[in-house]
Length: 308
Image (tube, rainbow, N blue to C red; front, side, top):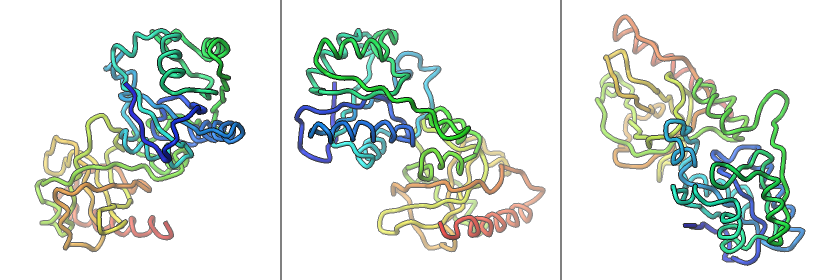
């Protein structure tokens, strides 16, 4: 039911932080920082438990959100945020039927050995979300652990939430999303063969196959970075969309590494980081217009990546 990734080998009594933590944004890190302080004060480790897949993907698939990070990325981000160990609860239909008491006894107490639990104030758990922070607090008193709930509001008018990050990404506002994530939004995928039209036009692109269910920025052109094994981080102009210039229908993520016509990235897994939007998707009168726009995209990308 529960798998784990550890930064240390300790599996002793721990402070436990619970949540989905998709994207591991500033709000999530504030929660983890609070838990880290409690753990350090008690002289024990900090365990973070996340759920995969997202509970809505099981309970209401039609309402499941687009994810901001694959589970392996999420685990790495949680460890980097201060967790000593990351547990992944395999969220299934059977998991969803656990009562709040079952969840606390079987998972929080028996599997995670929680001495204290830290959650957001809007945390819900158990069958049909019948458990809230007060229910968790009452069960904690019974089972011998303290509960701390943290209000995650945001900064000014900016809400720190995965929902808000998804909204910004869907609108192409990747720079604003990065302000909440405190890093550029990243997609990772295998480079596969495409139509090779970019190569014919002088801008060879890597066609990145992104996993289904990931949050994809709005159609358009972006300044960003491509990271590939052995090559490091390279500046890139990234196109997202169906390529309507050529009557395309399949959404694609295609990255042109600036000034590099010699790269062979096929069958490699690369990461694409989005820094800023250059323009929206467009159709041009002819190929000359398209090439002129792509040339301008590259020039704009250079400017946007200066000092980044």
